Length: 459
Ligand SMILES: [Zn+2]
Image 1 (cartoon, rainbow, N blue to C red):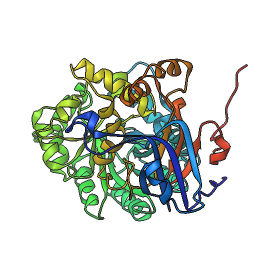
Image 2: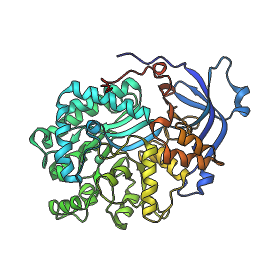
Image 3: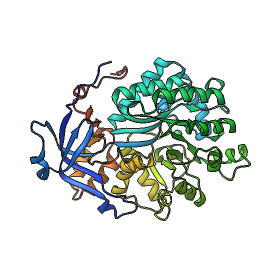
Image 4: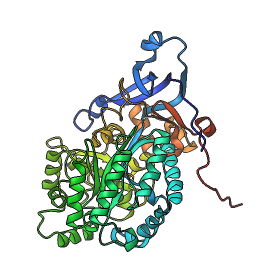
């Protein structure tokens, strides 16, 4: 495995930059957006130490600091994906089903292959490479029920030095025998993985019951007890994605007041709990999420692909009791690892509910909002001194169609909107992780990239 070329301990980036000073769902979006047309970002030992106008900072640069200028790019904080399944990469774009049948027909057979650690390692490499190509530098990631799938993922993430949250799926019922654990076995395996990986470098562990239907009450209770074993652990699961699923949960847990209450009863709902979807929820649930400090992951490409429904983003973010919301690709039900593509669909879902997602609000969700949903906003999600230097460089001229459209843009908001409607991985010119160039679209070798798998060419 070739290692990445080392980044200088101190270097700087120059170019147009966008980030956020405040939350554009609580503040005027145009004011929340910080736009620096010619910025300088000084990076030292993987952290941003200075950020501001080039003219104001040029004389303060330590002598001999190498400066990389991105002439036509827009430098942003790296994207944050708050809900994604790495083992489902091989089965993205699987035809024809809704949630419960889709799990049975496509997902479970694919996840069974992760019993093989070599297979898991190969997919983990491909997945993380694809994330970086999409400009995503942090994610909350589901592995499979197999502990080796978690080792494979964190091994590759540690090699890349990406800040990732991930965990072993807990699933002790309503799944094929080869994908089921037991309450005690799942607990023991998770605890061993926590010991091995939680806060190992930039890696963070999430206790990961798949969803209420695939865990017994005993397993959910043990998941709650796992969360209390170490400081700073995460919890991720699914909530109210699809109507048939919601109905099923109410039969499986007749004594609980709501779907969310199933998790709350087990001690799984609080800060650093990330609940995927929350499409079919009422005001009480939003209120409880706000009070508990847990987060919802909005996964529009997945919700549209599986016909699950329309997430009420603006209701969730109601300034009177805002719920922490991040954006999730939810691959393999999601159809793209690109947050730009995910924003494209988020915009349309908001339109279908009669609301307008401002481009500043959209990019906040994909960066600072996602970091806030994960309680990592003191480290990632914005460009500011003290933050970890996870960045992407966006190219609004990536395709001829985008270039001609970008030429018509008069404001940065217009340009960001073009990026989120027409952009995808082609519009990610470069990606930095802890100050290190890990993806260079036009010179992949310069970033130590390698072909992660065999490519079959058809001529
Ligand atoms: Zn999911």
